[in-house]
Amino acid sequence: MKSKNGKYFFILFIIALGSIIAVWQLRSENITMTEGSLAVHFIDVGQGDATLIQNNEGNVLIDGGDRRTADSLVRYLKDNGVGKISYVIATHPHADHIAGLVNVLNTFEVDTIIMPRVAHTTVTFERLLDAIENNDVKVQEPVAGASFTLGETVFTIAAPNSSSYRNMNNYSVSVRVSHGSTAFMFTGDAETESENEMLARNRSLSAKILHVGHHGSRTSTSQAFLDAVSPEIAVISCGKGNSFGHPHEEVLKRLEEAGVKVYRTDLSGTIVISTDGTSLTVQ
Figure 1 (cartoon, helix red, strand yellow):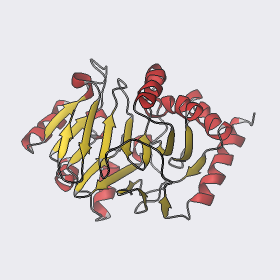
Figure 2: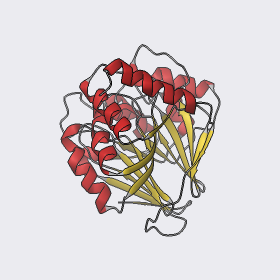
Figure 3: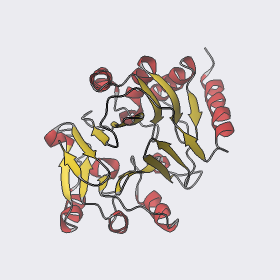
Figure 4: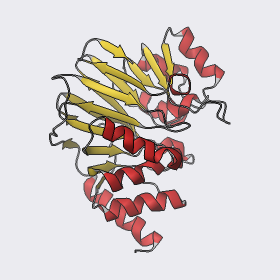
């Protein structure tokens, strides 16, 4: 096995080669979905994030929760017809977002993983690099403004917008997913610094559904960012009785004052939002 530094520089080399590509196309998969529909599964992985996005062309997975829920995540994906994943988005290297991806990469055929160009000195990050290398998964650096498609669904990268941050949360890959006139906004653990950069880029951030940043922490979902997204529905992924106090009261108050309907995995478990591009169904 390569040394840790050797393996990381190998990954960076692959990322550098891929960073010149601005638009990616996904291959179709044999998934049973209603023609023209999109299903977004905000999977309950406790104090972590994992979101499965499906249409009749295939699957995209954003994050994978931590090690404690890794086996249940794999079972959930299998139970929902996942055999192959076109893209995995590892928003940033914290364990509650990437640890479960090791099992995913070792279980399913994965074409490409999108991950920011930042290392983390943890065993979890090392295991993810091993899984990427051992399963010959292509690595793609996120390029803000770039997009890829999954059938009729368009994924547009909104962040990160800088190459260096003091806080690792701000490396989070943020992505706007649009399907017809319906859009979802995902920001990982991006905090106000990254939110402000997204606002400064003056790209469309509006979305009917916001996956609330950083599990509802007060460090994210600033008023300016919330105003720009202007969601009707917000989903918060957090663990029941978590030690961080997520979601924070300030964030819940901002959402309430904006008239946003809030769903939480700590209260409702896994939440699935389906759309035909116009209407929404929440389970």
